[in-house]
Image (cartoon, rainbow over all chains, first blue to last red; front, top):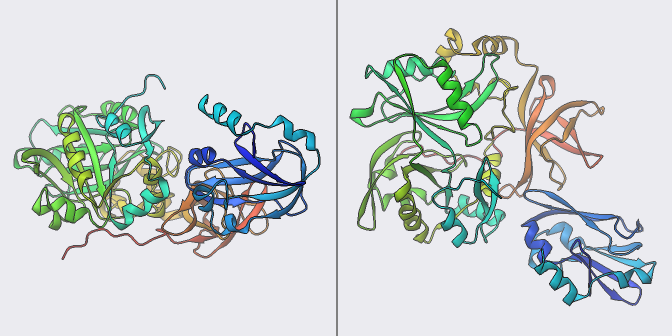
Length: 121
Length: 381
């Protein structure tokens, strides 16, 4: 599992990455009430806007951790946005993507680095 | 966060896990560990406890000891009928400027205590209180004193369980009429605490607002929180509760550009005052009552799941901008997005189809009757 500075995570299986936001981010957001997912087939550039996550108080952007193409989205977070708060690392995933530039993964933080990063915030 | 004021319950909030944010110059709890959604739902199901001590509390005292003197003065600044208030009775109104725009909305109470039933007690918004007091002072008649009380805290207990809970401290609370008050002693853990308690609130639920001295508010707050049905509620849920209840938030749904007629608050101006005027801004109010204002406040229901927030453009079906959203969020009790805003008069009919420009896209919505959920104000028996 790899993390970005904006608190997105990506879990790789072969060339497919599953993307979500960390429990830290979910806690900061508060209760999630709406998620706008990208369309299947959408091309994402690393750091580009992939989703919108709305809490009661505000809307936040979720950025693509690496470049690629969206191949599947998670209807569960569409129908039950509270899943993001309940299980941010598991059932609360947003989308799966075919990544295009494997080298970009190396620029992300591993779990320990991310933990340290959060402690410093 | 330097130079932020704190209420007397600041430490209490922090001890209870509050997330504190700056609001109107105060460090206030936006939410507690329960979270905004659950705090909101809990208030409508049981009872929520709010610290609203940041709001301004003041008194208008007529030197001649006659209530009519104080009421007559206040009636020059607000459109509500103040003279007809019975001792203990409370009313909602607005301070208007010369142009008929709203400077603030406030609660006005004629005190019920026999020795003080010529006094008027006002509660104003935290963000406006300094300006409100200055405004009142500018217009103050010779025979009236404005006494600001900075030694009082203010709590609100709101929800269906509030009455039952309050009765443990004050048996008469159960049958107190809505929009009435008592100045009395609450029995709290063997102590008798003097307070001003009114059956009022800003959530659409039954409940009470309690004004009590700074050095006693913690004792009362702790005693209330001990009750199984009570949870601490932050400003986040307070906002979603009042929005579902169709209630205006100053600085958002009402401001100096809006008149009470545009804002749909004509119900707070009695017929006699509509006719005779005699308050700042009366000209515009009377004109708008006859000619109808160009725009009016409406409830807006986004038809999809995306919330539409303050500032969102409201469009007609042909794509022209016809208004703007002034408050918008997700309504936990409604289970969907809710909003309020202003639209041109001709688009204000209930059921009118509109679009909202959210993130560059036109999203369907409709004009809906307020409140979004029925209110539960105490109606006796």
